[in-house]
Image (cartoon, rainbow, N blue to C red; front, side):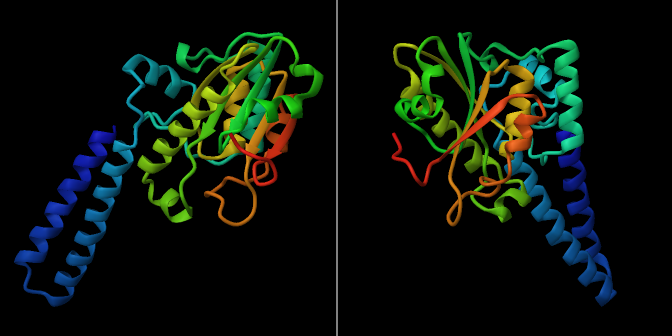
Length: 252
């Protein structure tokens, strides 16, 4: 489907260029040139969005995730949809009725006596995580890390250029696993939706977490959507949430 969209844009660009070249009408030439520029920009943005697709997704894995609406069906990228309370309640009811959504091995969270869904926009140390969990983190702690693919700013997000957002999220995920990969903590990670609230609801559809921990920044200098409200996203699933303000605690 993505290829068809790209081909349609290319054909439209060619058609606009032909019209601009052969017409004798000034106003029609101007309209054709404007259309040519707009369509060219659209084609470039479409290519950039496609190139942002993570290379660790295989065909069958991408299909499985796309069928569950965990990634975009066309590109395999984490979804950019915004959190919707009605849809989240539907998902929570489905989990309560049918159980967790099946996902590829790389997206499955680890087993443990106390399971945590950690949605992190920046790496946080094991000590800080344990501090926020208290006694519950003493034995059998297991953590599934989901790193939202946050755009640098709103402009980048809306034009669909996902390359930097994916690379940034993958770097955070790798560093977060390294920080938690110590005796007593079972951890796995993957990148996730651009909206942290969606990352929580999607994570709870695939992982039976006992608690959600959100590690992120607030205020000036945050990435687009980094500081959206998230409490309700966990509450709809009946899971408690605690937040780590990365601007107030040491990192690493």
